[in-house]
Image (cartoon, rainbow, N blue to C red; front, side, top):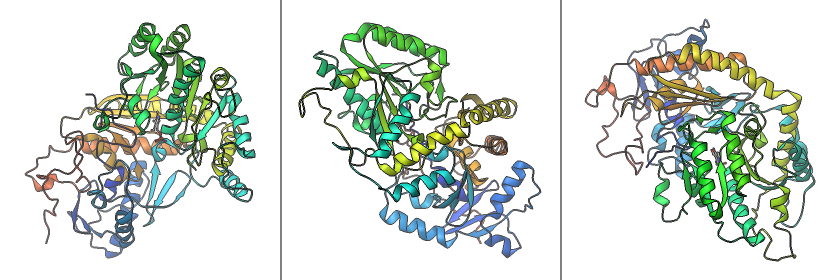
Amino acid sequence: MTVAPTPHHDDGDDWMVATATTATGWWRTGQRWRSRTRDPDPQSRRDPNRRRDAALGRALQLPVPWSPVSVQELPSSSAEWIERDAAVVWHGFTQMSAYPDNSPVIAASAEGHYIIDVDGRRYLDAISSLWVTTLGHRVPELDAALRSQIDRVAHTTMLGNGNTVVIELAEALAPRLPVDSPHLLFASDGAVAVEQALKIAFQHWVNLGVTGRSTYLGFGGAYHGDTIGSMSLGDDGFGVDLYDPLRFSVLRAPGFDSPDAIEVACTMIDQHASRLAAVVVEPLVQGAAGMQMLAPAAFAPLGEACRRNDVLLICDEVAVGFGRTGTLFASEQCGLRPDLMALGKGITGGYLPMSATAVTRAVFDSFLGDDLGPKTLYHGHSYGGNALAAAVALEHLSLIDRDDVLSNVSSRADQFRSLLAERVAPLDAVLDVRQTGLMIGIELASAPGERWGRRVSAACVARGVLIRPLGDVVVVVPHLSSTADEVELIVSVLVEAITEVTTAPARTVDDPDAQPVGHPVDDPADDPDGNPSDDEPALREPDED
Ligand SMILES: Cc1ncc(COP(=O)(O)O)c(C=O)c1O
């Protein structure tokens, strides 16, 4: 079984866990966090931003005063919020028994590309809140669009009725989509956009009276979401196979880490066309597979194989859509014109939950028939086509054009490419650097048990840059509106964090100094139940007085 971490999933680590972990080593004792040296200045100990600012200053070589802070109470506001949180909230992809001990960041506000926690600590969000935020937070125009829509109407059902702003959004999106004469079915999450696509593809053939087309072809390493259908389409790994009794089987081509993935998929399509409802692909980048990528030119044969065999092509652009790869949609670069397309994440600039399934006129027409007849798509969600989300999505689309955001993506991507080649790729610990647009994966050569991915990410978070790994791939998905200074900062922090973690002396379980704070959660890759193991040594202050 291959292990395919999901974007929600960093192999059991949480990017939040590292907030109290420092370069010099912080140690958990109940509610207290300590380092090994004492700062004589009590004032400095009370400033929660001090250490992070110093680290940022060093990363940027700014003249920020730095001296190691030693004893710091976990600020009461954090502790209180974490306690309240753990009492009533269930966090996805998180082992809740360990959650409160992992120093989660409790966001209180945000500003531009920074998230600010309840204690006023600021974090440059280099993962765009799991790849959703595009232009940052509190964008004046998006805020205004939302406020103005509230004065009209927040939500009306799309089942059997319409809403002006949703119509306007569909009209604005339609000419931009690489889909022929599209119609859009709106929902709220990416997984549902995929789920809808699967159902539509299946029923399309039923409506046409074609029998036997009930199978899908997916790729190795694929991730399409967490609903039963999207999870069936996705590859095994990270607990997905637990649901095998519920998952339907699909034909599986190799993942993008195999250079012949598309070629093999095309052969499979030729062989199994009569039972295929659709082929589903993440064009250009398999994000959750650890940023596995193929060149744009590789994809054209896939489109041709689908056309030649009259098999529907579904492009899942939930992650790659809305500019992440340098074009508004990745399919454009690949020369693909899918029959169905799943959209989500960046559609509202990361403001509100919205997703959509776009289908060609031909697919749409196959559902036309008698009122309430069997050709009707009996599917729809209560909040599908939410007016507030639509208003923000509409404004977001116009900002992408007005501000020439795709040019910025191209410039920042070029800057990343050269900085990563110059400063990150040569590091001994780095196996591979993969990049398409502003989707970046840095694969580390971690030995079993070393968990460099999580530790490097933790070291980045400690320096005020939010990073979340996928196994030993450090993932960077910055905002589309990132500045040159921010790119410089992210790369500097990465270099510092990778160097610090991968050149540290080897750690052993017996050595109390070997237990860094912030990583008490076991790795589900090692422990499939995802629970901390019984023999995990308790974290303790080695020189507690
Ligand atoms: C390619 C792809 N499809 C679908 C999804 C699921 O989207 P959501 O988390 O909004 O359900 C994701 C999430 O990361 C994704 O990367």
